[in-house]
Length: 147
Length: 147
DNA sequence: TATTACATTATAATCTTTATAATTAGTGTA
DNA sequence: TACACTAATTATAAAGATTATAATGTAATA
Image (tube, rainbow over all chains, first blue to last red; front, side, top):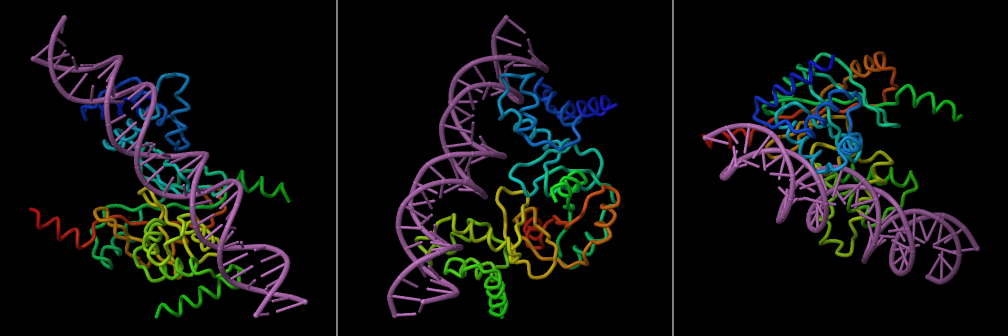
């Protein structure tokens, strides 16, 4: 079923005049199929067996290209490395402070906050980001076991 | 007037059993007086003349200590380096995409979103962060001039 | 097929942050 | 005040993520 999303994404690439190389295709496909918002390094490691000669720079280059044409969003959280997300629909994220897991979370867009911010600060608002932090169920269970 | 806030903060340090060294005092004072949410490197550069022998590690160490006792908050945005904020009162931030300026923005805490997220995801929520992005008045004016 | 422009690879460099070990300096107590 | 204990600082190195560079390879097109 994500086959369709992949075809759509490849269509977007073609429209943008971006070449579809095997590595680029693989990065895109991996991102579309992954629910975990992987880091660049995770993508690199995942594709290593398929492309033994691939360079880390290629992963970064492709992520940049995909981001520039709007297929991929870069998420910069507290930890050291960025995570990447195929931005198909609008959603927020909830992040586990213990294990770093990121789960999608749907909530109506906070338009009211944006418009108030415009009034108060005089900015032209273009977008916002919201993340919620806490402990996921798995880590809660592990913490209970230890006691 | 921020003298009072500084004294309060020093009180908190003492209560926590943390030593008040000249460098630590300077980092804290600089953060309290700065409205710009500086990076570690900016703090280091600002205090260089006062403490020519100070190490960058000292800045990081002190920021970590101040963060651990809750006097300072670490902000990780899209750019490469963290910014630091004396978290005295709860507030959100609005960030200029053009010049990077960060302005404080007060809005009632989004408790409703937090509680819904708990229900939907099963997480124990501890906090959230919200940032609004846009163009500040100054950059808007500059953009208009160019046309 | 030849050309051109874009991608990839390999490598080095940069930048931020953390770790380590030795030295220095605060702080409580005699 | 002086001592001793412990934490903090310094200098340095190391780690980790990302970007830059130059050479090589490859896709698309005339």
